[in-house]
Image (cartoon, rainbow, N blue to C red; front, side, top):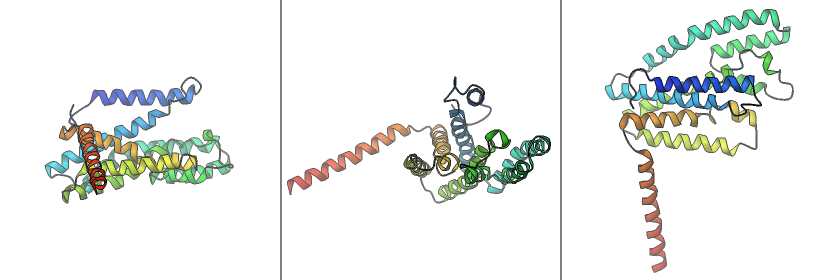
Length: 242
């Protein structure tokens, strides 16, 4: 496996993720777990983006301006078409209040904060999902919020000779624990919050690191756990002797 060139396996995984989400929405009783396709997309995104960043950092050609300009060129043309189409369609099918709300969602989609807007709107008096034609942009908001932070952190860690994989693992564990810790609290917050979703993107980042540097992270983690266990046993033995 490598990170260069076209990856047919990743495109195939994207197709599976898309079909699972579509089947979940069309046949929710037959595919109750189809929403996991979104989580798969997050992992894929983290993998691809981190692979690009790591490669450019190693070659000394990484540029934050270049990275963000490529993201804008990749996302905004298609996003603009979707926003304009929904704005025109909403004029004919939505009520006044719903159309006003759509305007706010269009602004949120253009600014990549849709997930925050939908999070704040969730509750007893929330509008039905079929009256929010841009509801799907919540996932794009989380991805782009991650892309704002992650290249900066990777570039800083690389220049200061810090271990990228240690940073990835630490942040992934923190995000995952925050997610698990809030399960019995605000479900909407867990769903839309970038903090509780970043661990999924970071899994992709860790996989990209493993593929690029050809390291066996599982073996390394086991080795470190074994070293910690040995130290703990030594400490207990010393205490017992005293």
